[in-house]
Amino acid sequence: MIDNNWTSNSVVTKDKEYLHVESELKRDYYIINDNTIFEKNNKKIEQSLAGKDCIVVYTNSIKQNYSDLIYEKFNSLDSKVSYLNITVTEDSKDIKKVMEVIDFAKKVKLPRDGIMISISGGVCSDIVGTASSIYKRGVGCIKIPTTLIGMVDAAIGVKNGLNIGSSKSAIGSFYPVQKTIISPFFLNTLPEKNISDGFAEIIKMAVIKDKDLFYLLEKPKLTDEDIGLIIKESICRMLEELSENLYELDSLKRTVDFGHTFSPYIESMSDYKISHGQAVAVDIALSSALSYKMGLLNKGNLQRILNVLTKFNLPITYDSINYEDLLESLNSVCLHRAGKLNLVIPLSIGKVTYIESIDEKFESYLSQSLKDINGEK
Image (cartoon, rainbow, N blue to C red; front, side, top):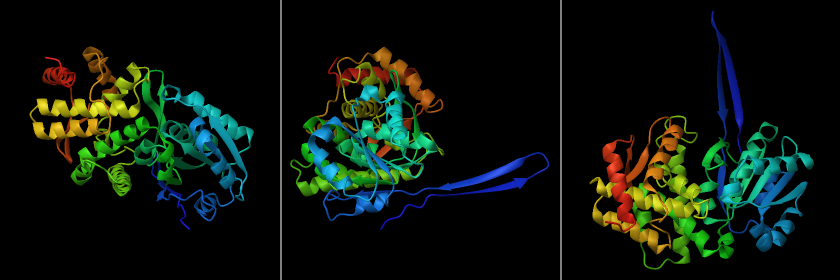
């Protein structure tokens, strides 16, 4: 049985003028890859709950496809289980939805040692993750992602993001789950568009970190074994990158922000009609074109990146992008990153650098790069 080890320790020392409190908080969590968690003889969920009360939060598509499987598994456990079906969209990923989960937890009297379980995609995962971090000042959380983007990105780190109006992920929390359980069988009922969204995040990791993963993505035809390896390696690369600065305390320069500088504007300006994965793909294309325009990325590697994006049915442009508005949106990015742009751009496959500030040259390069990916002269 895998146990979590969450401990804290504080030491107080006195001086003539002040008291000094030195506090340590240790939390570990596990990513488990198991395609059989809902089978009768699989005890991983039961062991994870250890008889504690829980609420299971899921969305409409999960209710439609997997409700019988979920009820059969959880109703057989030695735990008090309450179920909450919520309707979520990217533009409803806000504090109101968090309060919907918290109000339900209060209604069913979820105790301080209780556990919130998200069986869902990334949006619901962020909502439940935030709710678990503030309900009774923190209860346990288990995430079972049901989308590819959740499996390789949203559900494996410690960050939960919520929107405020048109400001994407402007608030949230850093709060580790106890476990994330990856079960790729959920992908069997996932629409192709959602699969493509997940590949945007996988392509991101390949470009910034792993040229071998990128070579694999370039294969003309992928087998089931290839897909399994791609998911596994993408998760590993993401966790390796996150582990160096998990809580974003050491630096606000993060390679995993590749594809996430222009994309918040693209999502919000479209009223979230363009999905997160699609926006990330356009961002990757624009950032790569910008690097090429600056003479940092060669034309061959730029074309490889664009080819892989289109191979997985991802867009490389969005016609409604307004250059002036896009440029203006970077002010919010700089505010979020403590005054620095920290735009990640590729130098080659597997190697990146940062653009930290906005100047006239950058503005000119960005304007031309936007025209290039739009096919304008």
